[in-house]
Image (cartoon, rainbow over all chains, first blue to last red; front, top):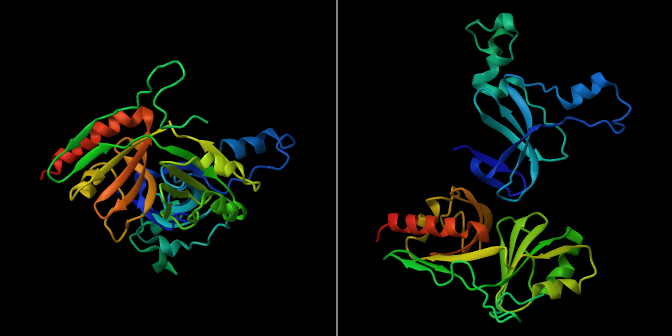
Length: 120
Length: 189
């Protein structure tokens, strides 16, 4: 079972207490009626869905009930950090993602058998 | 508001509490349905905590997993601005109504049913369905938390080294009771 650090309960709790709540840092336009259909589509439907680091909203639904944000690696399923809702998106370098660093390479480089950091 | 403990309504009909009288014990675990109590769900910003604490006669805990007791009244921290207040004798809703500071107090006395799980096997019984670390280091006496037991949400309060209070929603109480009986039987003893 995954242990997820809740920034409000200030400790790691079992994943069963949490619920995923979509991508984080999707900004709603202050004047939603004025934006174009294309922009609304991007805001409402289009999600980045990357392989590697994603920033997500999670809710400690069977605990303190709070929404918070988490950076998770979709390849290893490892939570890199969690932080309170409203806080700025943390800078996380590709090197920190460890085994999944290869996932952030260009498609043409994906078959190279070197670590992501080694090419520099 | 009607007292939760009132047994007879004006029509002469007797109030029957959920699971009344059901008890179960093995050598290591004793499981009992607790008597009715007054309960309120309290939501308040940090600025109102002092006034509410004064009115309720106890210091509302502001640390995660903490609870505070005074006499028959216990306040359980559920979230950064949320508490569950359980009272065996008084009326916390009336106390909160005297507070002018911003808050929301909702009577939920009959929403919940409470169990006590006690004995040497209490921790193991709860861990059959609750994934939290319930060791004394992580969950000391007085610690409380909203969490899950099997398929349902519960509020757990450690009342002693080997005693817990389990609060669940009334409609889930049958499931929780049967789950705890099964789990207690599995702990042996």
